[in-house]
Amino acid sequence: MKYRKKNFLIENVFAKKLATKHATPLYCYSYKKIKQNVLNFKENFKNINPLICFSVKSNPNKILLNEIKRLGLGADVVSLGELMLALKSGIKADKIVFSGVGKTVKEIDFAIKKKILLINAESKSEILNIEKIAKTKNKIVNIGIRLNPNTDANTLSQISTGKKENKFGVSEKIFLDLVKYTKKSKNLKLKCLSVHIGSQILNHKPYEKMIRVLNRLIKKTNFHFEYIDLGGGMGIDYKNNQKILNLKKYSKIIEKFLKNKNSKIIFEPGRSIIANSGVLISKIIYIKEGYKKDFIILDAAMNDLMRPALYGAEHRIIPVKKNNNKSKKDYEFVGPVCESTDKFSTIRNFQKLKENDLIVICDVGAYGMSLSSNYNLRPKAKEILIKNSKTLVINKRQTLKSLI
Ligand SMILES: Cc1ncc(COP(=O)(O)O)c(C=O)c1O
Image (cartoon, rainbow, N blue to C red; front, side):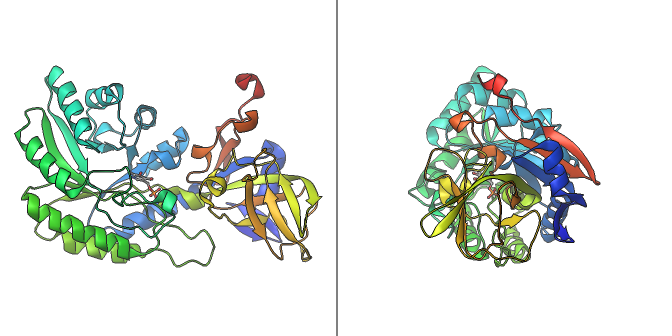
């Protein structure tokens, strides 16, 4: 993604051309970038040869999932819908792991029927439920137990999942009890210790701490885990100047941890695979003078991209066509939704904009479309994929007819 003669391009296709043809707001992904991210991830962790399960919640587009599967990844799912979608996208059951604190009987039943690699249980009640269902089916089910390692991921509090006050996983004490319990079970086969401490992690230190907890706990259990699922969480550079997680360093920490363990590592990355492959192209409907700033009212809103309203997350905004004139006033980029939190960013010294200009919201490939909604009865945006300079429609724009 770059500029040519001041015009923004995605894999050599002009963003303006895409907006004219497909209308806005428009989600646009670059296949090249996804592939680059997957290869980079694999290269950095090649010394530990992990099973990489793409976190479907970050982007559940069926065609993108199929591309990710072709690049060799499995799937991490958190609902029946995601599990069915992963299978439909061609991902084999033995490369699928299922996390989540509230798996229903129907979900567990389906996961057992499809013989997925692991159900990562998050409570004693869930384990008892899996056992009960397995018993009625006369099956032995492979499970993992998700530990809450009480480790601060040093990320936004809303996307932190590994502290003791978070609902995810079980405490060390309960973990130890459950290992004992599952050892005796005729219908459960404990294979995995799983963790996921949060998302958008930019430094290896939280992971290092988490690994120390795992090491200590594994010694206490005196149990051989065939798999250690370390979750996802690897952060990306949303600001275009951020120091991000050194994957090689993380890989070295894991390599040391694995000595004398004979366990296979599973990762569940979402954001680091798909976030920077996607942009949201949007058109300015109106420019409205406000107190000390101008409101740039876009045709994209919080229903299309929820992260800023939900977590105060920042996404870079750049023009589709650059000019050399700077605006004297600050610009606040907002959507048309009737909420004050429907705003993306306030930017100083942005180039001068006018109504009908196009802008690009960057790095929206993860938790962009997947968190979108029909709030204010707005149809969901169209999604396209640029692959080898060809444009593929991978999700049609929702119609009002289908909503009303
Ligand atoms: C259990 C689990 N695994 C993996 C992920 C993916 O995280 P990320 O997109 O930060 O890699 C999440 C995200 O919240 C998660 O809850």
